[in-house]
Amino acid sequence: MRSASTARALKVAAAGAIAVVGLSWGPTASPAAAEPTPEPTPKSAPELAFGRTAPIDGVRPGSATGVPFSVTNKGDGPATRVALFLTGTQGLSFAEKYSNCVYEEIPAQDEGPAQVTAVCDIEQTLEPGVVYVPEKPLGVTVLDHALYEHLSLDIQADAPVFPDGTQHGGGADPVLRLVAQQPPGDPDAVNGYERLDVAVTAQNTADFALTGADLKGTVGETVTAEVTFTNKGPAWVANDVASPIGVFEVGIPTGTTVTKAPDFCAPVGPDEKPREEAAGASAYRCTTPYGYVDAHTELPYAFRLRIDKAVRNATGKVAFVKGDHRWGTLPFDKNRENNTAAVVVNTTGSGTATGGTSTGGTGGTDTQGTSTQGTSTQSTGPQDDSALADTGSGIIPLIGGAAAALVMSGGFLLASRQPPRRQPRQPSRRHPDRPSS
Image 1 (cartoon, rainbow, N blue to C red):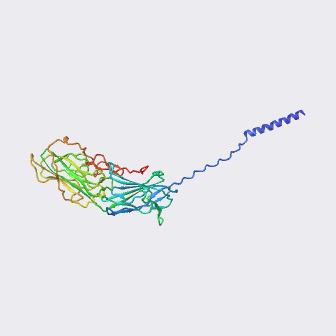
Image 2 (image 1 turned 45 degrees about the vertical axis):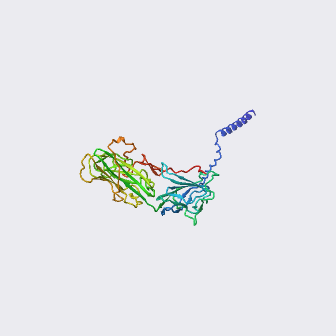
Image 3 (image 1 turned 180 degrees about the horizontal axis):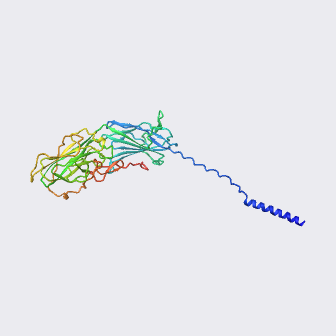
């Protein structure tokens, strides 16, 4: 009996041990699989782009013209508030003003010519896939001095330019609104940019003129020949490329040597290419300081000439040459009679004049005419160059054979040195964060 009881106790103990082993070494239950994290839904957003707009040509100065444009919301969300920035060149003004726009006239500054600007607060919703146009084209007036003008438009969706409660200008003026184009426009016919530049060309001219100098001196004397570039108007002219708008060449009279050249003029060799060595150069190529020139602007270029030998009526031709602008010519200049001039040097006193008339070459091709402008007289007595007032003149190597060393800024050119006479330069575009009331 006792042994049977002992056997039962061992069985129970063995069963318990097996159970324990089974709990320790048996297969482990797998936890429930984790649910995948859903990806966040992309937030819808507007994307505004201008449609194509043809240039406007042949506008009579003093008249107004409409500038049409279209804008499409290419995004997948509505634009609930739109800021429209307008910038016009100095030959334009806004023919009509809107009550939801703030206007500013930027005068000519060191950075560039005058401009007109506007910032418009368009408080409406532009739906995706819809082509919008203004209720009527933007009106601009083409001023009397206009020629090659531009109206630039920038548009931004939900731009915090106008805080709530901003007071715009002119409560009685109409409101600039955008409406869906009818019939509906093609939303794919867009430039794909938030910026649009519209060229506005006026039926106008600009008279570019050159004058030379008629000088007298003795052998060994240094005289000053002042050549003048003038835009007699009525239009101002902006270049269509990043180069000066006026390029002309000054021939150096035989028997003279340039001891000091003005800014924006560089010596030209016999192969018509720029050269760094000024000594003995027979011609200099000169440019206007910037890529534009205002109407009724006069720029003097003073050359110091040392008379080395007596040559009767030694003449250097002054003439416009092909430049990096509008096919290299001056299509706006209809008066070609003043496109050439001359620098004439006659010796007096000591020294014997040799030969007959001697003409210094210009090293380039006259693209504007062949007549010679009447010359002005300017001479100085013998004096050392150091006695002259320092005007910062020097030789500036040309870029590409047609431009002085220039630096680009805001789409216009900045000269690396001061011009012969101060000219304004292009200001940077202003997009105010908080327009004035």
